[in-house]
Length: 407
Image: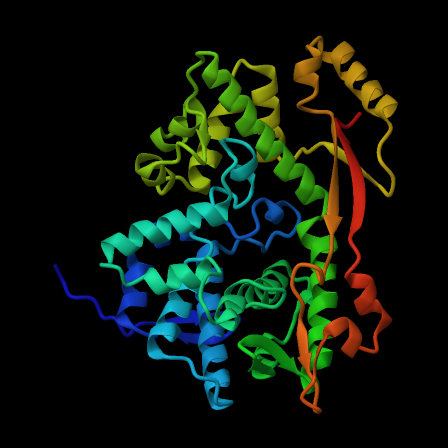
């Protein structure tokens, strides 16, 4: 076989040229497990709201790695010791942190696999790759799991301000065209430091942190929890749920071998073995989209109508409320659907349902963003900031919604 050039660069629309730091990272990017991320959309069906949101998990992972390179350079400049092994492990961990995402990112977790998160599937992919690459991912897995004895390295991967959030806010803002979500991730990284082996932000970066939290809140309400996006994701979950239900009753649905495997088998954390992992690695957005294009002509009323709604963007109506939806309102819409289409209550509930969403831009009780004051004292952002809104952002806000067919 022809030898590969391992000194390639990516031209990224957000950061410009991104370099690959070492040959191991190159080989991981080249691996089929990672290449699959080119076919997994970063924002699921959000392109039905924001037409530009067609970027992938591949884009995001490469961007995160680039920001991690900047973070390591900044910390070393400030005399924080990061060994070569730790540096390599950080790049691997952040590169592979989302490798366990299924088709359309989050919809899979709530429909055809049960009790296993994308983080757990990511960990299993990393373990499999660790075997293939002769144990060279061992330290990366430790950091990814949060088990390494230097907490700040784990915080760079997963915390209230990590390289994951630093990239996806900026990237999703760019591709959706929602300018309010744009953050100065490079400046934030420049303000990073380490005190007592934990990550801190220097006091002069406090306004950038405030902007980051406000941008995060805005992106959740305006983009990630946009009501049309919510309906689309709920419909997709119901498509997969109905397809699984029909498959389990003996009805053969046209689908790829990989998708059929998950439709015909009850997959949980306990039986998610190597065969399941390998089959999962063959699954991406195209499997689900191609299946829905076929299923829209199926005899089953529920499956065909759900698929048509997504493919033709003729979605359910959604109403958001600040208080829980009354059960009488739900029953009224269910009854109307039963009478109109002469379907069962169980079938009607695929089209009429209630749910709730919650947004908390800053989860101070789980993990804090620490500000390093000029005096050397380290305090939580809510105490360091003179903005009342930052304290408000640490309170969860819950909204309730009902979905039902348009008149």
